[in-house]
Structures are given as C-alpha cells and as structure tokens.
Image (cartoon, rainbow, N blue to C red; front, side, top):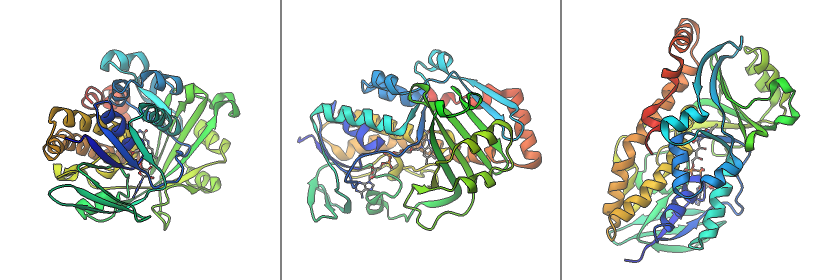
Length: 391
Ligand SMILES: Cc1cc2nc3c(=O)[nH]c(=O)nc-3n(C[C@H](O)[C@H](O)[C@H](O)COP(=O)(O)OP(=O)(O)OC[C@H]3O[C@@H](n4cnc5c(N)ncnc54)[C@H](O)[C@@H]3O)c2cc1C
C-alpha cells in the first residue's frame, strides 16, 4: 500500500502527526492556510502526559532547551494573595509519572516541531493553501484548496483547529460555541518586571468570575500571564488574536489585590481571545470517519482550564501513528482503532476542563467551601493521576 497521507493544518497537532507518522515510514503532505508560519505570543503548560509524547518523538532535548520546569503550582486568593493549595511539580512529577511538567512558549513548541518536521525530509509542507472542500467516497478523499488545487488521498487528517473545515465536511454539526469567557494573554520579560513580580512557579489566582494563571517560559526568562474573565465576545470570533485594552482588563480585575493587581498594572501589552468550545465528544464518530481522522482542536476543542488542549493534540498524533502501524494496509480500520483509543479520554478532559472553569470562578458561600477544601486537601484535589499517568 502507498503510505501517503494529507494533513490539513500545520499547528501543534498537525506537525506532531506528520512527525509521528513519517517516523513510521509514511510520507505526509501538510496543507496550511497561512502564508507564513508563526505562533503568537502565549504560553502552554505541558503535563507529564504531553512531555512523554514529545520525548517519544525524540524531542525531549529540544524541549529542555526552550522550556521552563516550575517546582510547584500554587493556588492563591486573587484579592488577599493567601495560599489556598500547592501541587509539587518538578522532581515530584518526574518521580510520580516518569516525565516532567513543562511550561513553554507556544512559538517555541511550534518551532521545535517544525524544525523536526523539516529535518525529517519526508514532509511536504505547503503554506498559503487553505482547504475549502472535502469529499469522501469508498475509494478515497478528494480535497480542494481556495486556489483551485485538487488533491486525492487515501488518508486525510483534519488538524485544522477550532474552526475546522474538515470537521464541517464530515460531521456538519455547526460552528463552535462562544463560552462567554475571554482570555487576555501577555508574555513579558521577567527582567522588565519589578523583582517582587517575577516568578518561577505556576500560580493560579482565583477571583469571583475571573481567574489568572502565570508561569515562566523560555528557561524562566519570560513570564506568561493569562487572565480569564467573563464578558461579551467580540463580533469576529474567528479572529482569535484581538489587540486588547489594558485599561479594560484593569477594570475587570479591580476586585483583585496585592501582587496580582501590581502585575496586571505592570503589563501594557495584552492580546485578547474569545474562548469557544464544543460539548464533550459523544462518540468515536467525532474522532474519525472512513478515511478521515480528526485531531486536536478540530475533534475536541476545549476550555483551557485543565491546560491540556495541546497535550490532547499531541496524544492524538501519537495514537494515530500507532494505529496505522498496528493495522497496516487497512486505513479505515486503523482509523476506527484510533478513534476508539482516543475519544473517551478526550471527552473526559473536555468535561473536566469545563468543570474546572466553573470551580475557579465560584462566588459567595460556594467559594468559601472551595477554598476550605483546597486548604484541607490541596494536592489531592490538584493532582490528576488518570490524566498524567497515561498518554
Ligand atoms: C487561553 C488559552 C490557553 C491555553 N493553554 C493551554 C495549555 O496550557 N496547555 C495546553 O496543552 N493547551 C492549551 N491551550 C490549547 C491549545 O493552544 C490548543 O488546544 C492547541 O493549539 C490545538 O492545536 P491544533 O493543532 O489542534 O490547532 P491549532 O493550533 O489551532 O492549529 C490549526 C492549524 O490549522 C490551520 N488551518 C485552519 N483552517 C485551515 C484550512 N481550512 N486549511 C489549511 N489550514 C488550516 C491554522 O492556520 C493552524 O495553523 C490553550 C488555549 C487557549 C486559547
């Protein structure tokens, strides 16, 4: 059988899938809509499950060169800064799960995947190629780009993110939903901050109807900050990188205090994302159908409150390559196995991320109950063994 595939989307999931598959003897053609590749400034946390996938791709060293490895996660009260709970990361995670907990700039993660894809020599990466039409029949999949290019393939991977065209062709289940949550994101040099605002740990600040997460990236030299607030979404949901008004964010976070408020006032350059998701997956059919596999946000867009969207895309990529190796010569069967291996775990992560968001934003007596539980059970509530121990 001709081991050739087409992948739509050169994001974290698409590049990881290309790499995982070419390492097993496939040739991959990747069609990316953007004329230039470049990730915007923001960070990504990678649990041990995601780090394990990168190590499996031989990228452990490349990750170490660009990531930070925080010693702990601290959960704090947004107004008083009181410590509510701690989860040891660093060595504790490595001992427990056999892989580290890393924090990395998205551009650096994307860059190390891209470099490996280019070095493989087996990936044909075509930029400025937005895929519009996808049609599947018993023999294969035909796709067309905006520029009139037509391609035929025996295996198509839709890794084209939240607004996936490939998903639209396979599932016809409408657009993603606005969550009512907005993310303000900033990436700043630690050296540009007052010493007391610099940090080498992951901190989640919990406030009523908002939360803020900060962590180091780039070997600890930069600090990534994301503030999630509730509010009306911008009209153009698909443009997920709006310039943001720092003054607006300061008003929204006026209910915070101490070091968090100082940090928010110290940063002027914020980007704004309107967060969208879909309900948790309901069946394997949302992960693959026939000769088309969906992967990453195209299959299971999620809220970022478990910090696992990229992690699940990486896991999908590894599982896809494994299924194709285990069941050579029968693409639809291999994709069924891929879908069965992935959909329930992805659905569980999507559901847990939604639940976390609700818990993070609690108000009034419910909030007091949450804080008391965190103080009592901290690590037990914050650790997620079913997630971190497998990938
Ligand atoms: C605020 C926020 C914080 C987050 N924090 C974390 C975190 O800490 N940890 C974590 O694991 N995840 C996190 N995520 C989630 C993570 O960023 C995504 O889940 C991940 O990037 C999904 O990767 P993907 O490859 O599926 O999609 P994308 O990265 O969106 O890539 C899709 C690619 O497809 C291309 N494309 C789209 N349509 C077409 C088309 N028609 N034709 C050709 N190409 C196309 C796009 O240009 C893009 O390059 C966060 C997300 C947000 C919004």
